[in-house]
Image (cartoon, rainbow, N blue to C red; front, side, top):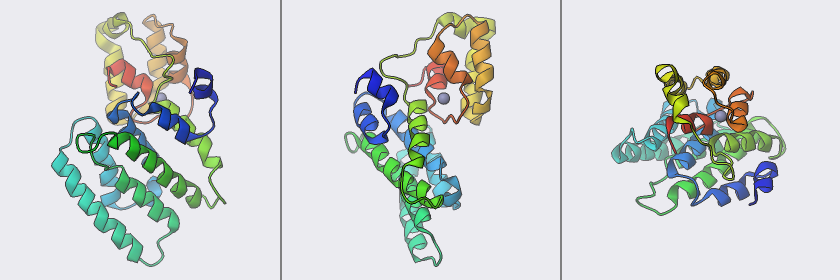
Length: 231
Ligand SMILES: [Zn+2]
């Protein structure tokens, strides 16, 4: 994948394949969780939503392997329940499968598990999303998914750079704001972060544009991660 292809590619799988070995397990897992959050309505079961929230915490080192194993077992039962439940939709079963897959084993157990798992979740969530909208097939959904992918994974040809002066500016206003956005999923505050960065002397067009860009951002957003030093 060249930089031009990264910017213009209109399919998710080749970009994900390219990122394997280049991006962290954390990014892949958060990417998978963001996909699940796109079908949140279909995951209206505490076990499913809980599984996605747990996988996000696990990605940030805030949940144990034992908690993950418990959630995996709960999701296996949940998926069986759903299959037996009258009136459950195909969209739901794909979405639940995606939530289950977001708990995939750690890289410790299986090399490349996180990246391969993310590829699997992307496929399952994709099916869930277009079926939920009653569309005849994938396609419309792809644009939104590409935006999500480019939110979590920064352009590998333009790795971001942070000037320590931005972080120190006004007693750490910028890292504080970024931390609050991350913790509270308050991505609607990104334009404020962009304004403050500019005030602090940032002239990085990619970073400023990303902060001011309308549209969805997810936990793992590369701009927020960059300022928090997360990979
Ligand atoms: Zn973002």
